[in-house]
Image (tube, rainbow, N blue to C red; front, side):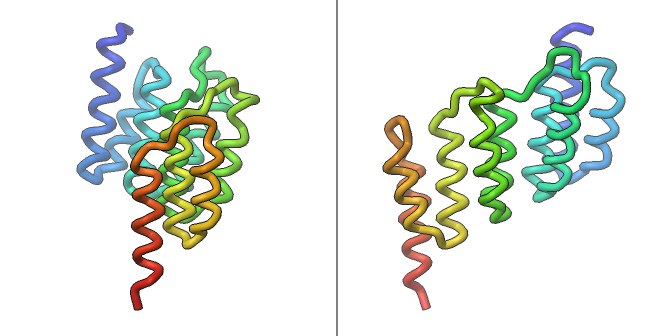
Length: 158
């Protein structure tokens, strides 16, 4: 199967999921003759964007547990997972994923930290969010401070 064919299947997964048709996205994913890391990421992202963190985590677990012919999670996989955890308030899960990076030989990027900062800010843990921004091993992006400031503004509203 060519890369072009795999990309076509991945586009179908994301297209169905974007429109809320997760059953169809699952069907496409399950029937793919060959999956790339982008295929796994497409399915994880599909669940995550639709608020199904348990399903996203199950696909991730299946990805790392099965013999996926050399396909391993990458940085994009974790952006999807961390973003879903953030939006659904699962900060402990997000932290455990981030802590697993060294054993998976993944170098964290600012986007990974941004997901955690956003989750902390959303859950009212403003001091922890601020501390994480300050402790990042690189210059934080504006979105990190925006998440913190937006949450701080909401905390002052009646």
